[in-house]
Image (cartoon, rainbow, N blue to C red; front, side):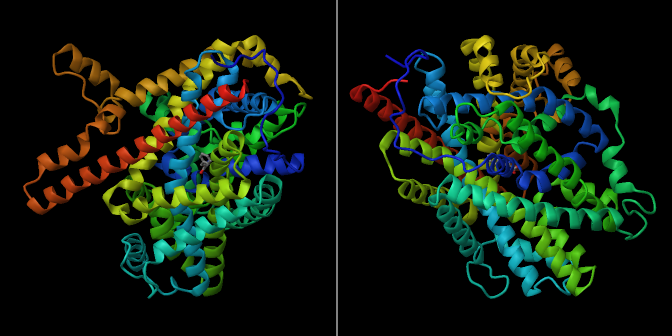
Length: 567
Ligand code: PHE
């Protein structure tokens, strides 16, 4: 027997958190969304997908998938909160009587724990780089030296500056800070962090964007001498609309940057009061994220690096992933501005990344905490501490085996695939099972301005269709994103040539196996084979986390039945 939407038991939870103010709520939600993704992932995705070719699908995905998902998640959260639920398993359970939904809701706990485990590591680099910018470590280094600093840093055990196990130490510091803030609760911790972090982030961002667009380095500055960096991004290329690969990248970025499909928005929104305007709040937070991403995010990394290095070199540097540019190159470019401004720019850039990161990682802690507080009556402090410990245990493999691919594996399964799967499931639940009549009412209840009714149609038809397209595209995406060639292959008996990044090929380790087959170097073969072992280990670990969370949901459900608490 499961819950039904008609039962109206009052909140059984001892969880009495709430937001302090509307501004605080919006800043916390914006802080949740604005993250490392805005400054590191977005520009790199844009560069990799052809600049102006990327931006149109990106904006369309924002309007037709991002915005609807924001409304869906905010209203699901507030709806769940009314029934005393603060994490997705029982929020979903309340929306339909079929009992499997609560297990789909496990994604909203699993994903946060898994993403936090690598995200906090990344966040700890930004902390360390602030330290090194102040300490002047990068001053006088050439580009190669800055790059090798980063390589040593992630190759844990090799000391960069005499601090042993520096990467581990900063990771620990970062976790302790996160745990401490979380233990202070929503209004006393998370909201305060957002009120301090977000304005500073904007301030640093505006400074760097100003430097970025007025840069006169070489002949390819942003505004002077050809505007190459900005033109590259802002010259629309309409033919890209026909390229599914660019669409998938754009959709993936929208998910990651808005933090939809994660369960954090539902959790935050479950603490708003019943009559709060969610239609407008969701837009305020969502558009703030877009401002930071599209305006500030595109005015820093790309113009500065293109200004110094030229567009071709930047495309080359980002080909192997995004982190390189930020951590291996930027400190060197900043040092071109002289010792003082260089150090200040370093503090501004990595400080901005740190604030962006921490306001997001805090969000990732809240679904787990809400769940343990609601279901097992844990205190906030205990819930926060347990989150810190779990992330430490799961995060250490990403720190220690970064070069073996564990970090990327977490990012792929938790930070990319899970988001799409969960977003698709919750959209179907919301628009088709819960139904648009009730759903529309939930979105507009308490709204000062009504949502244009056009969106009723979008949420019911367009968003699920796009999500299915994205999911199928990620599952069986063909090599090089060339669907035409893949269908031709099917026709002429060569079979479907999967892209190495597609879910199925990834599961089969297709890319690594190809590398093994292509080499005769036995040392390389050995290292690639051990990479497969690490990657499979990482997957098992992630699976174990999911199953454990599902088991806890099962136990909580039995407990609810025993105690006669439904809804
Ligand atoms: N939106 C964050 C970013 O852009 C990442 C994030 C994902 C944060 C999921 C919270 C939850 O970096």
